[in-house]
Image (cartoon, rainbow, N blue to C red; front, side, top):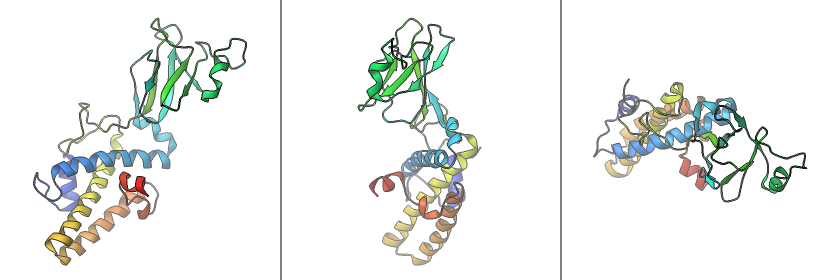
Length: 232
């Protein structure tokens, strides 16, 4: 399979090297942002697709376990047996005293566990996990784009971990759009070549529309980087 760089070069007609505009380092950033953008748009447009981006933690008893804001899909606790994992129900933090009260209807046993997320991001599981086959793990939306070797995503890669193969082309499409934006800026302000700028605009418009249509949106709704949307 062609590398991400080769796919982007084919889509844009732009040769990318360590010294080009944009550079291969820039392309790595575009691919990283693309994975996050495709993940977000895919889940919004089709909530059932969330499992395609799922990742699981190791079993733990950490009382201050924190996923740094990653979207939680589910929390699972062992019920005294490492082959018996029970899905925890979510409770608001204010209900912690209820799930530890054995006289309460909301009491959480190892067969009907619960979890909550505190303001500091810590995931609390009830009953409190311990090492004797009463650990827990979390399934969440992967927010660390990486290749199949579980290292940083690179322009030399062609596949990703915790990411559906059928959506890989959208990552390269996103990166192609960013490459064209960078090149258009270079043409406009450095080379002052209006003819090249106009040709780039036409390709950029076509790819932006294609990317937007993949999520059933208008081009204007996806024509921003994650950082640009955050500032808006």
